[in-house]
Length: 280
Ligand code: SAH
Image (cartoon, rainbow, N blue to C red; front, side):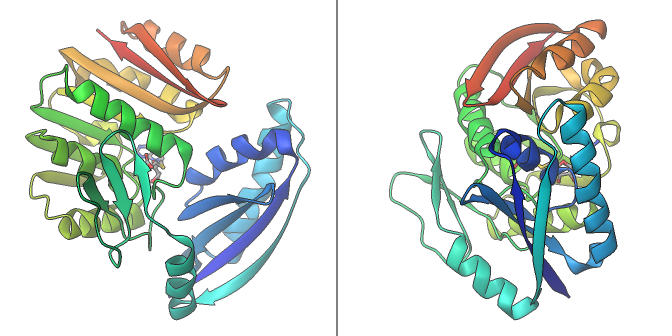
């Protein structure tokens, strides 16, 4: 197996939107660099599929009223080169008040909860702002919600589910439609020694029962799509954290959730990114 490293250039105003789109396109990790984006894909995706996604992004950017000019170059990395690349680029990063995200080859930090993430296979290394925001908010809400059942929709590397487990949620369910993400999440759960995370390949409908806390760090289009399923999965006293929206996109998501009978509770802004909490 090998990987592709894409060096993508976009207009400054489209950068956040591009990073947001990358996560939905089977991108394993994306880093903002020199006003552009360095993004990694597994070669199992096929180069034409990846190029097809990038072409589609141009249209989506333009449809959102942003500058759609986008150019890119790419290189193929063997498994070994890939590991070396990530070792150089994936440095530990702090999130929230207590988390410390580290790759398997780094040591933890005194007084912080380590989240060991092998960045090899899926999105969610903590180098993206929305992942860190979600971690900080999950930490904050864990003090005030029941900690029985936690659901992570679109788990990627499993990072949010692993954090929930380490914060003391008794039963954690993580779902992702991408089989590569499911493999990565299972491996990362094992690396962290968390024995209470059930990882399912599928969407929100593959989870059963209701949850005290739901975290969904997805694009706004996907959040809108899952809205009809959200009330059923959310406990009557629970809270759902919806993240991964660009400023302005939250209104459509709130409207979709309200249509299903949920109510908007709180909004958190982090630069151009927005997260909202909805409840019954
Ligand atoms: N939770 C991680 C990863 C977010 S990336 C973090 O916060 O960093 C978004 C993930 O959602 C990707 O792994 C993608 O495969 C998955 N995904 C996209 N659409 C989905 C859907 N409808 N249901 C479940 N997962 C989905």
